[in-house]
Amino acid sequence: MTVWQLDVTVESGTLAGVTDGMPLIAKVATSVSKTAAALSRAAGRGDGSVIGGWIGLKIDPDLLAHLAAGRAVALVSGTNGKTTTTRFTAAAVGVLGRVATNGYGANMPTGHTSALAKEGHTPFAVLEVDEHYLGQVIDQTKPQVVALLNLSRDQLDRAKEVAMMAQMWKIKLASHPEIKVIANADDPLVVWAASGSPQTTWFSAGQRWLDDSFVCPESGHAIERAQGDWWCTGCPLRRPRPSWMVEDGGVFDPDGVWHLVQLQLPGRVNIGNAATALAVAAEFGVRPIDGVRTLKQVASIAGRYAQVDKDGRNLRLLLAKNPASWLEAFDMADQVPTLLSINARDPDGLDTSWLWDVDFAPLRDRPVLITGDRAFDLAVRLQVNQVQFRHVQTFDEALRSVPPGRLEVIANYTAFQDIRAELDRVN
Image (cartoon, rainbow, N blue to C red; front, top):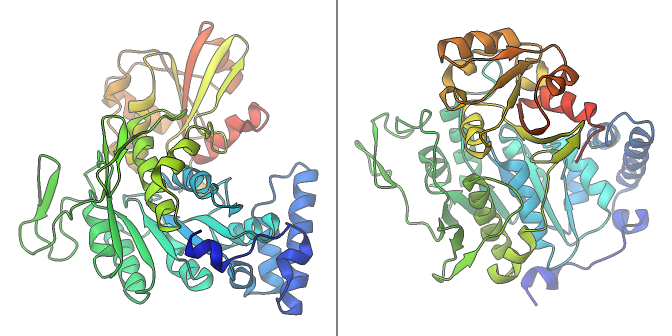
């Protein structure tokens, strides 16, 4: 039995189990939060993962802290891969007991509050956290473990510059030396952010997107790379030796034991996400040999990677929201007709200039369809990249435009949600 199992008690998910020991205002807020989320789901207005938390926090601003108390908490943050890594981690930690998690990707405090209220009293919580909110959520949930995946440009009109984000992480983690940090050794920004934490475990999953880490965040000198290693040319910052490594379709643990990772999700990047999940779960006492068995059960995350049959076509849905994730999506996509959909609504970021950071050349040898609110922005980019395409007005028109068989669908956030709605909110 691990220390975490000794410190927490599994109780039922009843309201009484959630609110025992809470102040009266927190009990009322929890009850109202759960009711609001349930009504939202019943009315078909969404899964309730935001509205329930929003109302609960209006009643009790400290509700997230009250709900997190008594649980062993892990937080997962970064620009890309948060939702998948969180789902993998929750699956692995689940071998020890029930886990509360924000599995639909609502990764701000409203979503965390709603997830914890909904799940009732659980010994464990694994929460995906938007990188901007990580410091705030650390203060409110007092996590035992924080996983840092990567940092790259995202939502250019409102997101902080990536070195500023790394600095925020660095300051916050240095003020919480009790937290165990699981950090990506291949990302210089993450290494710098985690360098002030006294309890850091490094994992290596590779880093394909390099355009945001050519310059050292500490000294401003150039970062040099060779044979998987990297180092700053002007200060001591360099790649640390990782304890967890991805190799040959599996993961080496800190004892040097290799574990085959069999996943339903595509791409090498997801083996890296799985390695991170195993490293986090190990901090709670989960043996890698036990955790790895749970990962193959994860088939789709809020529609991401889902495969759907419709009108004689087999569709696979891939979410890509910034240059780094588009690069990974192209790696996952098969050589078949491909639909690209781009919006620029508030959750996406209103600035589409990031499209010019994406190399669309891998799509030259397949039929390409484009749609979405900002399809014409994408059209100009594809023309410059010499990618032939056809513009379609609707998702149904896209289906009619390709022969029966496979269709890859790659979309940014709200475009992805639009397509999920067309497919009846496939999970």
